[in-house]
Amino acid sequence: MQPTITIPKHWDYPRFALNQRTKQGIILGLHYYPNGTELAEQFGAGWRYALMLRKNSDELFHFEENQIHPLTPSELVSQITAEIEFYQHQIAILQQQLNAITGGANND
Image (tube, rainbow, N blue to C red; front, side, top):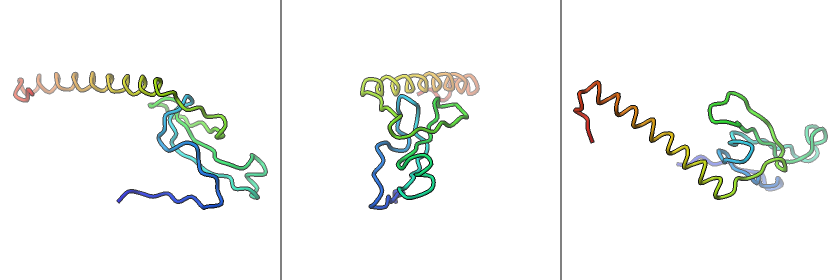
């Protein structure tokens, strides 16, 4: 069963999704300041997003919805392709290490 997040009907729907890659980073969390609340009066109503700028970063940055810019399709393809190539290289290194330990018994 897939996890489900329900957004109240009187809230605006968020423009961005969890784990979405953007020009500002990867979206790890979001929260909503509904109209008529103290937080909305202080900071403005609407969605706020927590982003990690780099995959191995330990810092989160918070942005309003209008401060986030989606990646273009070509930027997204470039980012994902680079990540795939990185992991393929890591797999090749691990396979070499495994072959050195097993004497090549696990060749594919």
